[in-house]
Image (tube, rainbow, N blue to C red; front, side, top):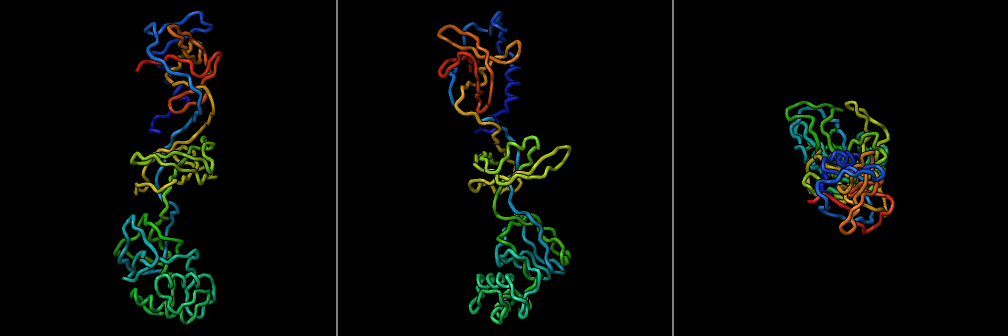
Length: 348
């Protein structure tokens, strides 16, 4: 749907009630203030259809899995990646004293130095798996034991990267992350000093998602698995589904909200981070109801709404109750109404 094509039901009612050209129908038909012309300028047909009442909220197109990285390296920063750069296995995240701190894949952080004589464990296995993938596994057995073959593979890897060939790997040389990452923010500068435990980079996964801060009062609109429509920065319409709904209300600028994450059905063309998007949430779904264009509604003098039924050259006002709004249509119920009947609408 086009951006701005849908308004909330309350907003549409307000527009209808405020329209200066609307006719006013008297209660019980005792008096009718006629429109500017005696004959109906145009007509629309009462249809039977499904209606979606929606609410459009603003979100941001971003990347999942943001986190801050630290290393055990100490010294002068001699190289950093650019914001937005993608770092993959075997490539440096930064360089300290010209020595690279390399990204390897694994779920366990490098919580201890790894060398011959350490206790066996899954951290040894994930190091060996990376060494083999990077081309250093000629005589290497991938298991949880750091043996002499592992020691030789580490030394060869260190030599190729200009590191001291110790056969020992620690957090001054390697950072383990689950996959490739995108650099969001560089927190150190070339020529600056870094120290063990200092934050050096903010990174994210490569997966795109939409994140929005939803007013706490609208939290019923966001349920896991709910399908949504997202309008991207370039005007592209994208399908998505809600994959995470925050359970803790947050406060900002006197506003209470919950965080909602939306996964898109396909990768968007836009590579922008934090780009504003419009998310269309369904607040109500009505099936198989009678509906007319919103502009067919007439404001009643005593309150409420009606429509002008057109029968040949004659017209008659009928009070109606309005229900869901969606796509420029409104649900109506009233005595004697039926699918296919014609109602008056403003010309043009």
